[in-house]
Image (cartoon, rainbow, N blue to C red; front, side, top):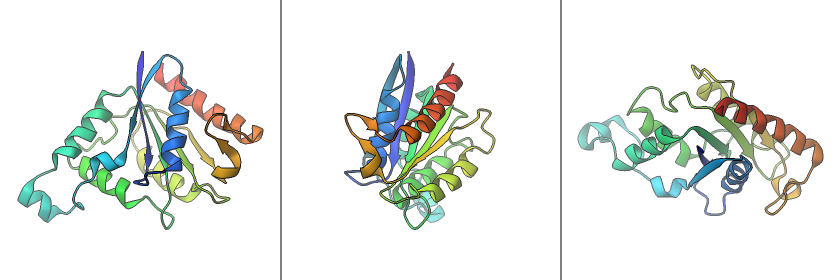
Length: 178
């Protein structure tokens, strides 16, 4: 059984990106999904001074261990001012100090969603460019626009055209897990 780690790259308690990542993970057959809440990994804002004085926080090591133990990773990105949320960026900064290969070259599925018509596409493009660098797997992406109009918790993606695009990305991710 494959172990899938999924999370929304947001600290919102009602994160639509966490819902979306969880939904995607739930569709992978023969997989054990671990859903991460970034609020469980809140740490001081990264700075070299903090690291030199106090070291890397234990929560960064814990997050990194969860990633290391996974067979695949699903991240759905929230967009704040066209880039990563501060919560995700801070965790990313801390875990990158532990080892240079942040995501262990695991198969990944990168998603994004928002209530807007672009579906957080800008941050997804930024994340893809950074995360795909050096990863030996083809990393599929998918952006879901207008979340409230196109997603229902018990049905998933309700727009058939968007659902077909999403399923293609999910299938590519699943192939990478093999």
